[in-house]
Length: 125
Image (cartoon, rainbow, N blue to C red):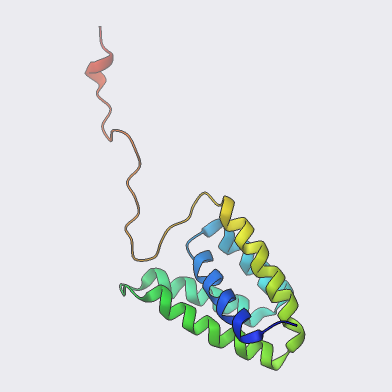
């Protein structure tokens, strides 16, 4: 038996983590549309735009709360979606473990390593 309240909370936290990875985010968007319907997929795009446009330090927590409410309502409307949601979130966690483009909302994008200026004199004879 799946505890829908716990699943909604855990899934909301996974969704917020996915918002930090373009690779996993695109995959999750397509999977949500296929498994859960167009509304959750559209909500994912809205969340991505809100979280990256926000200057609030608590933006991830706000989005998690929004997603918890959305997913609770989704499972109350159609309890059969609990199993696909659980499976989808498990797959998302696996993909996040190997994603190479994870960023944390609210933190600046790290500078690329290495020098920014090529010293041409260094290579002259």
